[in-house]
Image (tube, rainbow, N blue to C red):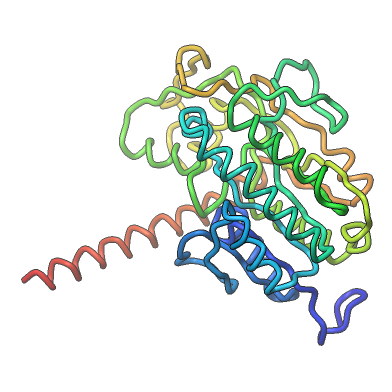
Length: 329
C-alpha cells in the first residue's frame, strides 16, 4: 500500500507532451504507481507510458481526448521551447504555448481536474540583481517568454486548481539540450564559443519529474485544493553557460580549455535572453517540501546516462543504415 492510497485505485494522471524531455521522464517515473496516460502530437518511439495522438492547438480534439480519459490530475508539459525559432515564428509559438494551454485548462476545468503547468525563467527580463521570487513581476524579453507568460495567465484565469512551476535551463535525455550540444561540438571542433554573461541554474528533467512524483504522493491534497499558485523549481546553485560547458567537458574527461568565453552581444542570436535567470525555490521547499540537489550533482549523474543514450542512438542509426543498404542490394 502506498501512502494514503490503496493499490486498487491508482490516481489517473494525464501528461501532455508525453514524448518531450520532461514528459518522457514524468511518464517513466509516474507509471509504476499512477495510472498514466499521455498525449502527444506525433508518434513517440521512446515513451514508457501509453499515449494518444492529439493536437492540443485544436480545441475540440483536446477536449475530446481529456474528457475521454477523465484524469484526476493533468501535467501540462507540451510547449514549443526553441527560443530562437519562436522569435521568428510567432503564430506557431502562440498556437503551441498559448492556444494549447488554454484548450488544456478549459477541458481540465470541465472535468474539475487540477492543472500542473510548467513555465520558464524566461518570463523575467533578467535585470534583477538577486534571485527572482514568485512575487517578482514578469517582464519577458523574448517572444517565447511572452507566450509562456500568456500561458501562465491562461491557466490562472481558467483553472480553479492550478500549480505553475517555473523551471530553468532544462536538460535531459530526450530532445535538444545544452550538455548534448556541448558534447557533440566537442567531438567536432577544436574550440567552441560559449556565452559567459548569462547566469542560471541548469536543471535535470528527471529531478523535476521525481519532485512531481513526490508532490503527488505526499501533497496530493494541496494539488487538489481549489487554489492557484506559482512556484519556482530547479536544481540548486547557479553558473554561467561558459562555466557550465567547462564543467560538462571536464566531467566527461574532455578538455575544458576548448571553451572560449564570448558575450551575448557577440553571439547575436535572434531572441534576447535574460542575463540573470537565477530564481529562488524557497517557496516550493517551505510549502511543498520540494528541494532539489545541486546542478553539479545532477549533471554528474546525467552525463554517463547521456553518453549511453547517444551511443545507443548511434548504434540504432548504423543498424538502420545497414539494413537499408542491404535492401538496396
